[in-house]
Length: 206
Image (cartoon, rainbow, N blue to C red; front, side, top):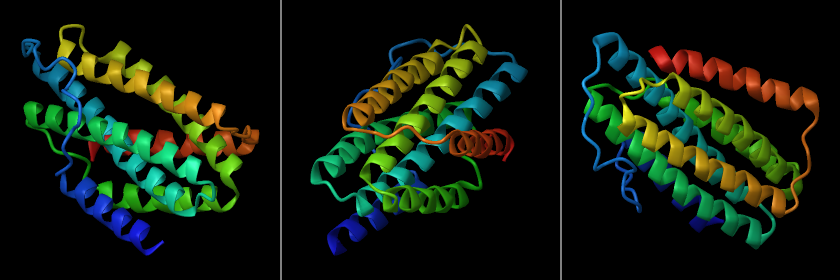
């Protein structure tokens, strides 16, 4: 447990300091930087800021859920998914840098809140915990699809990143379902969506 807590603290520091390094190449890195109108660049940067904040939340959720998971196999599954999420975090940070944009100023708050939610979900038991992952990834997959539709058609670099992220999130949800996830009650799913909508609206601007 002590080792897990130390690793969790290290993950929090790396996540919030922007020092996470990807294990995989950035999708679309070989593509030419598009020429965007000012309003297109602002919108694309806002969307990528939201996606970056989503990855900050993912790091917190997986770190918390791994701490309270009872089954070693479930903890290993979380660790594998978290490594993919680290790639996403680094990719979106790099894209923000290319836009000359900053991450959300509220990322420490998003991290703390997501960590607390992950602990609560984990305490309810591994199958509920896995059900939380399934629903989270389903909602994330939906919003990433919406971002692909909304990003400027010429911004193929951002679209390549978001497409790979969506594919990874779909795989994470399938992993949790295969591991025995329980479906979450409708009120919980609605509350999760409402909280995510608030995060997206705020992170887009702040």
